[in-house]
Image: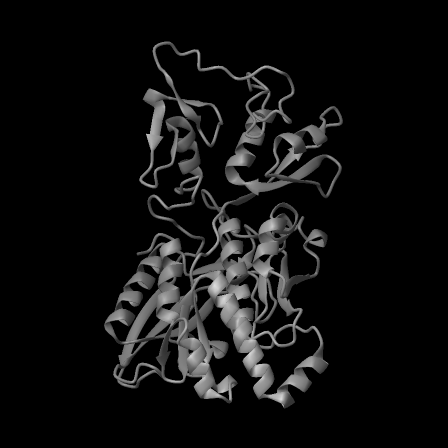
Length: 437
């Protein structure tokens, strides 16, 4: 999985007394001033360097704040809101993606969870709270918010490709051998002694099931079974027995077998697979198994029967004083949770509580374009889902589903309102990830 290579952060000049020095520092970066905010674009290294310089500047220019901040010790940054995430996904990330997690938090921050994901990961509906704690009292909101954004992006990309399954815990089976063969899967004892819980990317879970199937003709086709360490014997896989068809040099990323020339399918993202392997993958989710690019329409788990209405008024939003306001009214009725073809609600058969939400966009050309994209996302059931409310903590509630909305007209980003110069760009990126563009 790839990390973000470029990012945009917002610097509020209200945090700094020496405005002239702040402006000189920002001139060294790709920055643009909008009202009382500066937007800065750059790579991770550039943003990290900027945050260090701003930390030193703020520390020198505000001795009272310096004394107060240092007396607080190592606390969660007051400028960074904790995030609620799946305990299952977080347990997988901590155990299988420790290196990537370390790169995200760097040397200045530590990412903590409460409760520990390992204590709740058997419950697919469980959530844990992730907080971002600084090692350095002088860390700026710019750096802290960047770490949070980077974590959320990595979490979403990981969660979108993760599957949880159960396999029989047979005493005759060597589970250590399975762990060696399937390095991308997390094996944990189930809640009873008769099964094991397996978590990992859906194609690796599919290969595990194929490997364990009694109809599998060969035990040498697991995705991790082609290296010198994991291969149980000295033999190597030869070309396919099909005559008259030369195999490609590169193996299929799904089955890890040579791709027959006549069976090769190359996607527009330039990744190639066996046609039959790709068909099985697309039956589960229409994304490239290698890079995650979307092919076709993605459908979410938003409950049926919802409504999306839009009204206009002449009042303006902070930062968009030249335009009126588009007010979006969402309504999702209460109902019974269902089992769907590919994904299901967390508790099928149980009731869920509906929701009524209001959101705001500027009535500008860009705002109207975002509104049209949100309409498509709503029709594809991507705006809402059923889960645990992060505000009340209650389960079986209709909640937002990773496409952020402005639910207040004022208060700035910390109050889900305006001004927020980069909001329209951010939500457009969130929609693009889901194939809405």
